[in-house]
Image (spheres, rainbow, N blue to C red):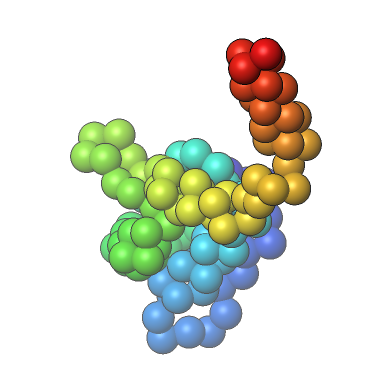
Amino acid sequence: MKILFKNFKIKNSNFIYIPLYTFLKEKIEKKEIQNKLPSIRKVASFLNISSNTVAKAYSELEKINYIKSYKGSGFFIDSNFLFGQKEKTLNLENDDFYSATRFVMKSYDMLKVA
C-alpha cells in the first residue's frame, strides 16, 4: 500500500475523490495496478480520508469501465479494459509467430495437394 500511494498528495480541493480518481486511473493505465485494488477501508485508513471519498473514486473508475466490483471480493481491474488495450495495439500482420504460422499452414496445404 505504501508503495502504491508513495507519490499521492491531496491538494486543497473541494472534492478529494477527484485527485484520488485521477491518481488511480493513471496507475491503471500505466499497468502499475494489474489485478485487485486495495479495499476501500484500507485506502481510507492509509490516506486518512473518508471511506465515502474512496468509494466515490472507485465508483467513477467503475463508470468508465476501468474497474469492476464483485460483492464480497473487492474491486478488480476490468478484464475488458485490459484486453481492450491490447486489441488496439495488436497487429497480427507484423507478428513473427503469426507470419510463421501462416507460412507453415500454406506449406501444409501445398503438401496435401501434391
